[in-house]
Image (cartoon, rainbow, N blue to C red; front, side):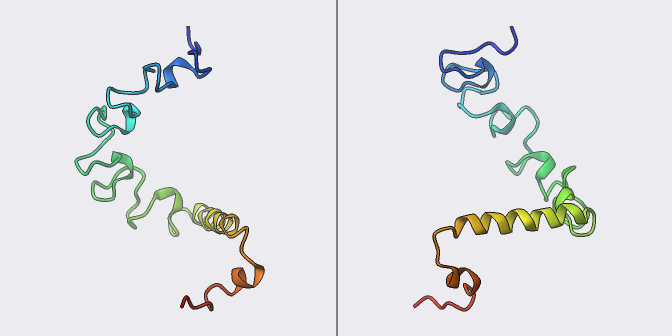
Length: 109
């Protein structure tokens, strides 16, 4: 029965504690396990599609992620910049405004 729940309330397939099918003996997801990688891991112990050394399918000829390349996908590149700026703003949530805008001028002593 697809979507069967384990005692934790998770789908049994995705439950680590109750030996879900998506986890190997190492207690790691099968798709990212270095030992039981199912062919998705390369010789450099990275995901094949994201490995720059193997020129994976997600890497363009400019040696960056195809979806975030400045030349191949300008819109994706801009969204990457927006995401990083947003993350940075949320990280600085408790910092006074003067330090946020002039953080490059502040010298740590």
